Length: 557
Picture 1 (cartoon, helix red, strand yellow):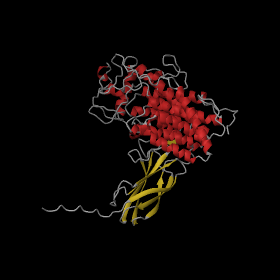
Picture 2 (cartoon, helix red, strand yellow):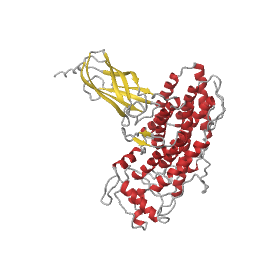
Picture 3 (cartoon, one colour):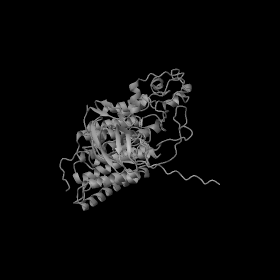
Picture 4 (cartoon, helix red, strand yellow):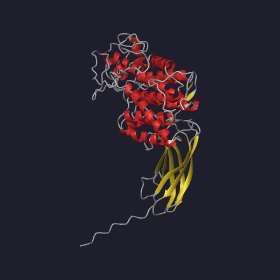
């Protein structure tokens, strides 16, 4: 009987690993600004590593290389690295801010991305470093972490909806603002009017407040990012350990009070949605029949004097006009606009007239995917870059984001109240779903093969657009707190590398709104005509009635 062959001993191979030695970040948050990273490549294997290797740098929200990360640099180096030896490489890169918020993100280095060198371990060729852009502070760091955490929840399959997410960021930002004001006393507090303990560290208090909200209000997928930033933020503090301990605990106590103040605000109302009867009524789609936030309009507002049961409320939208019975001409005109400019592709019935720029802006503002910062978060991302460029103080940043996120939270309440009050069908319900066949209007065309550009329609009624109301609220806050006719550039996670320019916050808010028409998910009245003014009214009210400057103040030291 023949003896079995002995297993062949594997050939000795190299094993490359990489780590960061130093990162010199770009000196601005502008797209294309230049930075530099120094990395150390080591051969931990048992044979010399010889040949070309490709090295890539990425910007990432979570330090785990994935489809949402953006490429910063690609370089090829010829290695001749004996076992146990290392080499330092300096890599230049251009800033790509599309995927990240400036306060907190990761630089990733990956070596031998094309597997040009056979190694004993192909899984240790990557390194990640947590960084914050120059001119940020602990408030901006944590505003960025909040967005990163929201994206992490989405990647894990638990997307943070516009309703819940805007409430989360309002809780988060008011906790930070009231914590800062307990030390600074430069702007009106929101809810908790107190004085910080003597000797407490302000930065540690902000960390405590921010961490408490995010760690208790989000799921486990976000915890790694939140823990990492907490450790990094506390490590940066140069104050005495006792000051850090006192400050951290104080910030947590402020957050606990803010959280408790919203415990019975109506956000947990999960009564099932029962659609009203009628032909022109939005109904949830099969097979899940999901209706997101049918009771959200009854949530207690954060700032505005809004009552969902009061039809005369000044913060409610103007009222739906374009319906088959009320204003059939407007209804038909707006549905035809969406059919022609909002479709995914040409069909036997529909020839699209959308321009390339309209397609770009529709995708640029989408943020409907759960693994993004979401629509409310995109506006925060833009505001963070504005805050860095403006060189705001820590207290000014706390105020800005408290005002912005409170306005966005109230915008969601007003928008969702209108949605389930008017229950207007979505454009695809009319165009492809059959309403156009039975609305009695010859100029509305049924196209069973029509699909919206953005792929799917969100699970709630058309009027008014939450997305567009957010855009208006953003414009209302930033116009009043930063300035009118403020020129700026913006980037998008949806289109890495694309930069769009605006001459004012209002211009950006309107483009955010009209993107929903070109995306095929809203008619113009529900987005541009009524939602933008509604949101702007809310944002302006918050910015001019809350978080106001205190002229006579005492700073806690």
